[in-house]
View 1 (cartoon, helix red, strand yellow):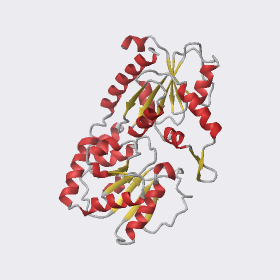
View 2 (cartoon, one colour):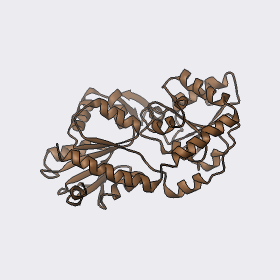
View 3 (cartoon, helix red, strand yellow):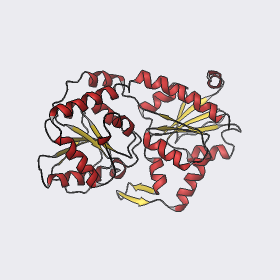
View 4 (cartoon, one colour):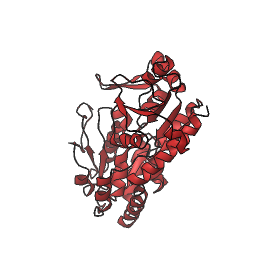
Amino acid sequence: MKKILKDKKIIYVYTGDHPVHRAFAETVTKESVHISEKIPSGYDIYLTEGTYVLPVILKLTGLLGRNAKVITLFAENRLYYLKHRKRFNREKNTIEEMSLLRRLIYMFCLKKLDGAICEGDSNIEIFREFDIGVPYVEVDPFIRTEWYTKLKKFPQPELKNKNILFVGNGPDYYYKGLDLLIKSTKKLRETDNGYHLYILGKYWENIGLDLDGVHFEGYQSITKYLDKCSLLVHVGRGEGFGINIIDAMLAGVPALVSDKTGAKGAVAKVSDNLIVGLNEKEVCDAIENYFSLNIKDRLALAKKSKNVASEFDKGKILAKFKLKFLKLLEGVYRK
């Protein structure tokens, strides 16, 4: 397997250049280019971050070289939106139906990929459903080292209040599930106004919902709120993973997520009761069930959460990534 990698020239084609994705890429190459720049020809493998349409078109037209391979890392909601024909209109701050033409182009290019790396359970499930004959592997992200050390040593929160934490940046409230979470919080407060939702992150100014009991805190360090909250909730619609979920778990705050959130596999190792469907009743019932537990039982879930999250160490994850990348190349070059 290692000989396959040694013989190949690889370049990382990035969009947002997430630190985790950069670290993944650097296990196999030191060369990179932004998608907006001229993508050079002559490489054997183009490892792309999320985007794939342009690299695939360049490959098909021969501009990358006759034998170039395009491998894409899917780590956000791109596949979920493609499956459900959704798109977020940033100008109007609305969810719209994806045009038939756009979807046909995206699906055509998806089928022309040489390989896929899917981060999280949500992405891998959708990619399998597409059943397009493209080799793929599943990977997990990691908690960056300085945070890992800090959160692992974080004093166990008491988990005594009914404060709920959400962490994520906008403006796409739909794929983050923030609209559903806010509506669920409002429903819970109809019978118990002890529930409060604290939202950390940027670009939520235009969400346009009644915010009684909901607190937009802006871009803040999660550590300021771990003592203040007793449960992190992320009911995403196609969230690639959601590393902040694991951050909270490592600090001893249990997490409740939707069955369309990539981190659900990790959360399920703590309790299946912390996985919910994408509807208000299920979300409310699960939150109420959690807060109906006595403190001893909540702390037991917190301990399990810490143990699960401790596996997301950078060194362990990067070692696994390289092995999986090598395995993927075997499939790519057998096609």
